[in-house]
Amino acid sequence: MSSRTSALESSKASGDALEAELVQTINALEYVGDRTATWHDARTTALLEPAHSLPFYGVVVVEPETPVEIKGCQIETSNGDSTTRGRFYVKRDAHEQLLEAAGMYLLVVYTPRPGLPQVARAIVPATIVDELLTGRWYEVGGSRSESEVAKLAWSHVIDPASVDPSTRVGDRR
Image (cartoon, rainbow, N blue to C red; front, side, top):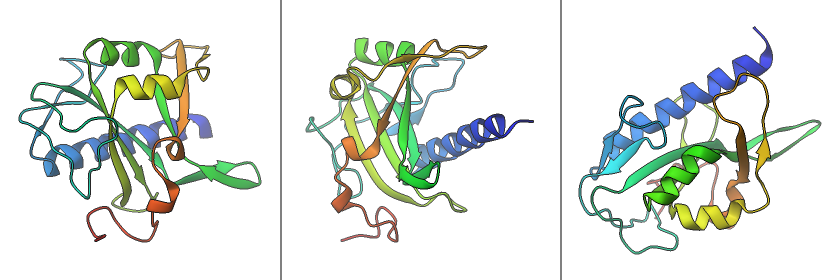
């Protein structure tokens, strides 16, 4: 198995673990399996309001029955000889469906340690993410499930000054 395959499997496992934890801890979220929809991970079951541990950007509340795509990224990732801020990986087809449905992204920044400690979260409308992705789309080849993707550094959405890598979301006051 190549290191690329291992990294992708690890990212998938991390994403699944984050999704499960968020759906369990945020009462207004309900899990949506891939058999129901592959373009979002959850939906709201009640009015979702911002909290200190879940700030909203560009929206005041999220109405019930709103699709939510959960995206996670590491706080830092290797960039050759140094590190760079982690990036959210967005598939174009899924993003377009989320846009059509007036959906939201739940963006999560975590540290790559056991338990995947979350250091930042944000609820962002797909329309705002769409603006941030302008000019970032690129084609991917091979036997991938998507043909066009984009990457977005978490710092384009969340102020790095508000993130303390040593403190989990919810522990800050």
